[in-house]
Amino acid sequence: MEVSYLISEKKFLHYNKRTKLKRNFESMDIREIIAKACQEGIRYYGDSATHKFYELLKEKKFMTTKCKRCSKIDFPPRKFCTSCFSEDVEWIEIPRKGKVYAFTNQKRALRFTYPDIIGFVEIEGIGRILTKIEGEDIKVGDEVELDFVDIDGLTLHRFRKVS
Image (tube, rainbow, N blue to C red):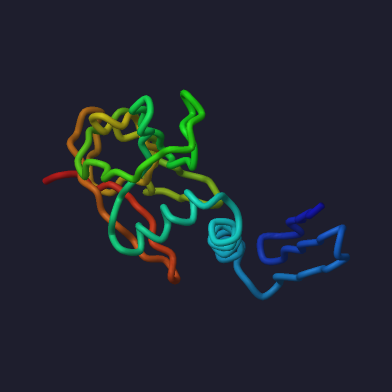
């Protein structure tokens, strides 16, 4: 079991009870620690579909899985269908345009901060995707298009308001 303690804004201690390993992040800013933990989590956790999704993002491809048996599309991608449980799935491209369904500005949070906009984008044929949204004066119903951002070797998706 792993336990993390926030001692102060500049001091963070991580302790793994199984290995008895302590890591002190005193020299790092709390935001750097959280960003690094997110990147490590994505690299080391998840199934084969998760890993393939992030590899495809590196190639600037936005894809998910579709069941060959019942045609259900799952996002995030899965290695099996969440409807009929078939493992016979194929990778399909996700449309690169959508509409803002709902959003919020994060004024005080550790991972996202003002003026970051986090929201749901409705994509035809796929459904709603939780994502970061870039742009000025965002409104529900605004058209957005896919964009990619590279953060320390990790490629993520986001959507940008169509001007």
